[in-house]
Amino acid sequence: MKEKVIEFFKKNGRFAILCLFILELALSMFVTPDKFDDAYFIEQVTGNSIFSFVRDRYDWWSSRVIIEFILCFVLKTSKYLWVILEAFMVALAGYSISRVFVKENKNENTIMLIFMILAYPLNVMASAGWAATTVNYMWPLATLLFSLIPIRKIWDDENIKWYEYILYTIALFFAGNAEISCAILVGSYILFTILYIVKNKKVNLYLIIQNIIILASLAFIVTCPGNHARNQTEIAENFKNIEMLSFFDKISLGFTSTIGLLIGRGNIIYTIFTMIIAVFVFANYKEKLYRVIAVIPFLSIMLMHYLAPITVNMFGFITSFGELLISESVFLSPATSNNLLYAVPLIFAFANFISIGLSLLLIFKNLNSNVAIVVFLAGLASRLIMGFSPTLFKSGERTMIFFEFSMIIISILIWQELIKKNEKNDLKVQKRTSAIIKCIGAVQYINVLLCILYTQK
Image 1 (cartoon, rainbow, N blue to C red):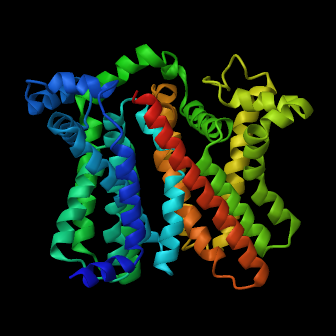
Image 2 (cartoon, one colour):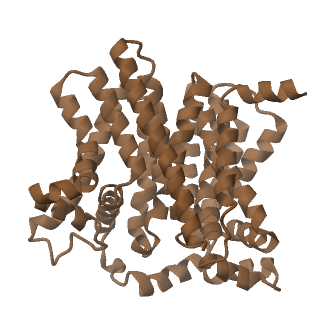
């Protein structure tokens, strides 16, 4: 029996996923989810019916009835139920990415993936209360990724066991109850269902069922009276001028606020992502233009954030521009339209994202089957849509999670391409890049642990 268990975890990167679960369990054990929104939910369901509370919330606040029912149930049951489920969800995200996107050398590549996930600043999940934030962001992300596995299996003509159908559908229901993850799943399932039909000249019944479920989830969100009521309340409290903005104003606001969080705040996932893009292009292309394009995003974050203490004395206005990026304001408006400075953040955002898109075309070459481009656009769109929300600035960095994990996915895809090279110089590049990423992941894990210990005093 013992030998079978050991053999099971040796295959397909399962041991790395188990380690991720244990590491996240160790972090969660030090957390008591009883502050901010957690405290509110605990108070509301203490001595009251969870069902009644969630039903009322549907009328005046939120369509997230499944998510909030689970949140209230977990908080009412035990802290340790949240501890176990939170560690499980992070591990589920890792497992799902490995299952869908890691093709070869499963053990080695999954280990690299785990370090990339550890680099995610999990302390962001404390912003509105550990339980409330993780259940509303990390758990929909994990179930979203898990519900993509049947797409992969069906596309590759793999067998799906009967109980897996049930698990994938449950995950779809949960992820579909959150607005952003629902939108991503609607796009993903519709796109790949169409591609499957075109490729195979037939319809897959399970894909059709999943499409119906996720479209019904979207309809449920759109028609929820509580969402409309909450939107008006949040406009009044957080962003009174948002209704004066045009569609393109909101799109540009999504771009500038996103680039501000990525570069102005020194997003560590973006740093790894842009670094590995630059490493790959420099290792495989000699053309100066390609290298310049690839290095723009990485150089941007280095100059404006990490090297800011040095560059402030040499290039003071570059540092000032970095500070402008993180200001919570609408840059382009009728009042500022005659000042070119306020158009620069949008131009800067476009330059970074277009450079990334072009670099991904260089790395993966084939546009028709370029999964990385699709993942990048889906992740970017999940953040740009926040430009239409009155809680854009209030919600802050936690709304970046879907975009950040899309960058993690693309990073592991690029890594797999990078390690296919066998030249001596490339091996040196691989080892150095691997060491940097693993070091960042390890240090970030310690950083999150210290954050928990400090804030749980």
